Length: 332
Image (tube, rainbow, N blue to C red; front, side, top):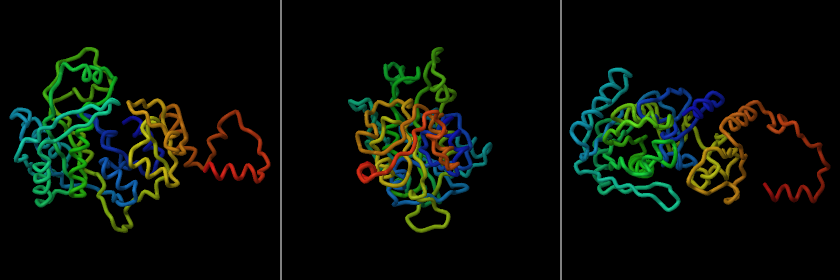
């Protein structure tokens, strides 16, 4: 989120994934940021969908039938608080007609994924809300508790990966693909015991009983999707730059945008469990060490300045002969 806030200061429009802006109990309003779920990002990058900035949504709330009574009440209180304190438009909620039964999985690479036993129940709930007037969907599914796992302890101490994110992506992808409305997910989990060694990067997720507040705030102004020409819509061919982790270049959105004029900025300090650098895929990218350096590149682009001019080592111009021209063209 700090990186997103900084980039938003130098961008006309920041388009980013909910997980970048979600902070459980914490969130930050960025008027020029578009909160776009992963499947929607893929469709946008492929040029199939445009993004239409929206001032507010009627948010429909889906609660997994598997959520226990007290935990369910905590989430309903969050929704009521968002209505009363933040003024958000939230419809009455729907409970799935079957438990979703989410299961978590981890690939050999360390990346996470998951399964849902009853996706049909999820889709029926979403359809019911949309028919009632919902224009965005928030989902709260009961996720497995595993407080003693090594992976969870690593995550709480600022290492490893988010064990929930892979399964969360499945849930939101299903709804966005089926109904083309903004969607984001918040897991329902039992509270964890206090940990005096908790990482500051994980602390926001342990301040309360639910992850729902940031999801409701993000969805309240998420852009609408469109397949048609619209004077307000933003399309992929308007993208100037894409900032990504340097080891995670294999996603659909990145592969699509790599074929456009968009500058790819790959940040080495954002470590992941993947090993897909831009060089391995033939993606032309500007490799930087940190987000601070990435922001410097963005500022130079905005000012029309060649970033190499800020270095003390600038080579002199050389004669462009046929041989050099041919090699430059081949490398483009």
